[in-house]
Length: 510
Image (cartoon, rainbow, N blue to C red; front, side, top):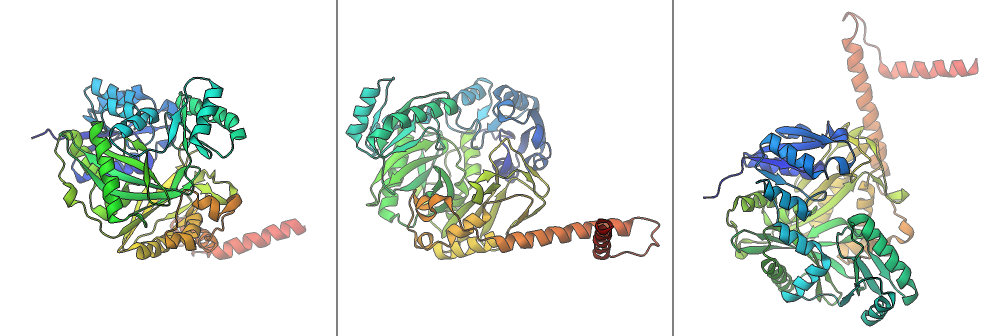
């Protein structure tokens, strides 16, 4: 019987740290949070059993500082580290350091992270495992003439992609040969800046493809399963915005083929833990390998909602050495789930981050609604990190019900103090194309040319402002009632504000 993990340090922040802390609590495992200067009062810090300060606010001095995180694990006595997603989650060096320190890294082995984190090596592994790949060519060195020749061979339009990293960094779509040289230089420069690695490769750019991914789960004993697909085609600048499961177009036969392909590359590379194999699906439903994400995905809750599998719990069990509790036959699809990423961003201003304090924050509830949130009212949204506030995940018995419930839940949100993407999500979900399931990675640019979004939450914002004002008046009234000797007659706060307005008017006129 494998030894049970008793204490886990979560090397992350925000909603994913909260999600993992809750998973630990379900299992009776002590959770340890880490925090930077600006996160001292953050929700994940309040919720954890223990918390350790790891440095200044910039992530390079805190959440990306391996020495400080390892030191916090040692001081806390944590037997394992869960990296969440982002930061050090796909860092093979950090995974190896954990192994060297005798700390369990809840994720794949370092050599697997290293292999699949390099897109060129991952592509080669996919070919060995028999997966279809998009036609493409590697770019080696600075030989521009050879690079141009290879681009011509693939045929325009092409996609230039960074060999390391992801998230849309170091990626350029090139439609014509005269755009190639400049795009190549910019992609390589951006990749070098973001990942310290300027290598890029080119592949055929698929017109209006879908981005569909398969969730995998593998143990240390050679067992591997997939948990069906997620549709992730609603993207902005290669960043996912809305995800759902199952995909509106995936048939049972296609699901089986894509699932088997994902399991094949997992077994071929000795994968351990939870991961995601991403594919591009053409309009004729042919599919092509894209990459493997060696971590828990942001959108993992939609899979949990339709399969009933707690992925964090399974990650921990696999890290303990337990065999998978599920076979492929155990995995069923129940209903439909949609996830909206709620960001502190201004959709009408180029999605610029909207930092500040949450003056009012009420989350939706009701049948089928799950909110994975990393903040509470009066929290600050700092400038140093991803501005995600929460993930709204909604389940319905079918896609139509899921859409209706998601719209209802979005309308229940009450947020003031900063801009959010709530109205943007309402606009997308009201789109006729979205309702029909006519999706592609170019959906947003086609539906909203020039980034002109019709925001549908003006009424919500007005209601939130009124609610915030009432909350303030109620708070001030309580203070007034509790002040003095107790015999003073309570004065109307509304009347006092009216008197102050009259006084200001008198002062201006005199």
